[in-house]
Each structure stands twice: as structure tokens, then as C-alpha cells.
Image (tube, rainbow, N blue to C red; front, side, top):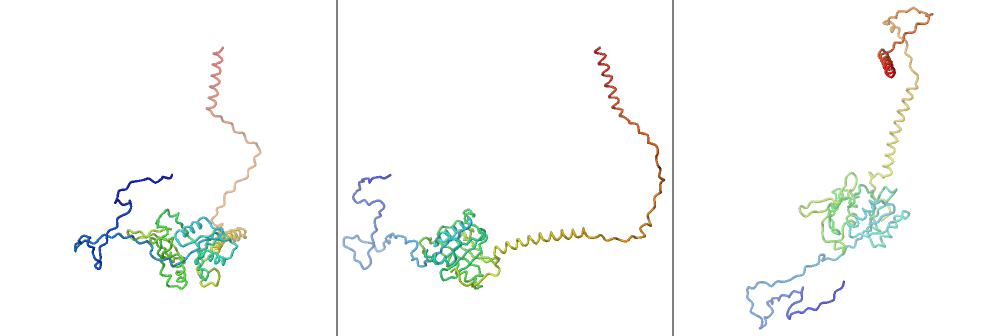
Amino acid sequence: MACGPMAAKRKRGALAAGKAKRPRRAPSAGEAVPEGAPHQREQSSPPQEYSIPPPVSQGKWKNKERVLIFSSRGINFRTRHLMQDLRTLMPHSKADTKMDRKDQLFVINEVCEMKNCSKCIFFEAKKKQDLYMWLSNTPQGPSAKFLVQNVHTLAELKMTGNCLRGSRPLLSFDPIFDREPHYALLKELFIQIFSTPQYHPKSQPFVDHVFTFTVTDERIWFRNYQIIEEDASLVDNWPPFGGPTLYENPHYQSPNMHRRLLRLSVAAKFREKQQVKEVQKIKKKGTKVLVEEDPTEVVFETPAEEKPVEIQLVKPESKPIVKDKKKLRKIQRKKQKKLFRTEGSA
């Protein structure tokens, strides 16, 4: 609904609403005071000055790092939510459509070039149950491949550690990243990918959460913590393509090998049970060992008296059938009752 302008009378000398009168500036020592100006005291209070606050980010956006975050086809819902969480945590990221499985990995370099991105996070799904993550500096390299395990998205945490959207994070690394050369290379790659460039247009000039990278059990754990202002404590929030291999983790075990070992262990238990059953069958079918007779066994046996054999030529008498006396008494009573009834009716 639109409203037309309303005419309002304004007194002479009145200022418009929202406009403040500028204060008079005190003359400097080199300036002369005009004749018509009032006499100023020597010890006068300094005049009030109104200053406009400067903009939040005064610098210039120089670091033009951009990270492309996308995946291949065949990912599940948890991977899709993980990608969306990374895009919200990294304001300098870009998204793209899913890549076909038939395409080779070096195609990602061309996609990054078209999207004007110098870094890439690519999620590769295999067999609809294994998830791999590629971190790459395109197109020169290097690139690192990780097996993603133990994923917890931001939605599962139910708003625990709710940090500001677009704020810049602090990066915290385990001391082992400075000891080993391959961990030092990964540290530099993590810094260039996960750190938000200063004065980025989509970022906020605040630091209220921390990205931690720790090495435990031959795995790199990535976690997001919020910084609480009251006591400075932390709250948990939820961890080029191609060319020669520079370093390969000797403790890495592929998911296929892990599943194969589980199947072999189950098969070994079943095989052991079958062997035990076969051994028991062989024992049952085996010939029994005949033990020789012991001549001393008959020493303590006492022979029983032999009874003469009698042949019965006459048929034995049949035993009389003894009826129950109570039943006989009941039958006699019933007969007497019938006699009384017949006599009464006559």
C-alpha cells in the first residue's frame, strides 16, 4: 500500500528531523577572531566533536584464495550434509555439480580453472559405502587423499557451540605436524585451504571458533570448537590430481582389505568347527581296542545256586475276580430304591 506525501508547515529557523546542527569549531592560534565575535575565555572547555565510526574492515582484500567443494555421484546423505557444513564454515568456498564416475581425476583441474579456484576439496564415493576426500592445490599440486571415517555433522550436534556464520577461524595443529616432513606438508596445505582470507567480502571480522587438527591412532582428527567469551573455554561443534606419489601411509588399510580380513576370520572359525566335527566322527568310527581277559576277575564272584527246572503239565487255576465291596453296596441300594418306587406306585 502506497501513501502520498503530506504537507507540513515548518517554522522559520527549525531544523529538519534527523539533522543535527554542526558545532562551531574553535579558531586556531594562527586565525584571527572577527570583530563581531563574542569574547572567548582563556580557559574554555574544548568543543564537542562528532566523529563517524570507521568501517569494520578498513583493509583491502588481497588474498584471492578460493576453494571448490564438490563430490562425485553415489554419495549418501551424510556426505552431502558434511559438504554443506564445510561450505558454511568456509565463506571463501564455491560449489559445483557432481562429477560423473567415468571422468578421470585430472578433469578436476579444468573445473577449478573454470570456477577460478586455486584449491579443491573433492569427495569421492566408492561402492556406496566408502568415502575418500581429496585435498589439492590446483594445478601445480600437491594433493592428498584421505579415507573419511567417524563423520558427525552440525545438525547432529543440535546447535551446540553455535558460532557466527562467516567468521574467521583459528587453526590449531598437533606438535607432530612440525616433526615429520609429510605432516609439515599437510599442515601447509591445511592452512591454505581452511584459513579464511583476510577482508574477504563474505567473511566477518570476528574470530569465535577454532579448527583443530590432531594426530591420534595414525589418523588425523578434524574438529571445530567455539570460543566462549566469558571464560575463554571451547565448545565442540561436531575432520594437482595425478603425478608421482610423494608419501604413502604405511599404517593405512583400505576398507576392502578390512572387510576381507573380517570375512577370513569368520571363515577360519567355521573351518575350525568343521575340523573338530570330523575328528569326532573319526573317533566314533574307529575300531575298538579289545582288552585281554584278566584271569583274576573271577576270584571274587560267588556262583548262584542252580534251581531245578520244573515242567508244569496242568493248567493253573484262574484267580477269582474280587469286586469292589463299595460298588456292590451301591448296586444293592439302587435295587432297593427301585422296589420301593414300584410298591408306592401300585
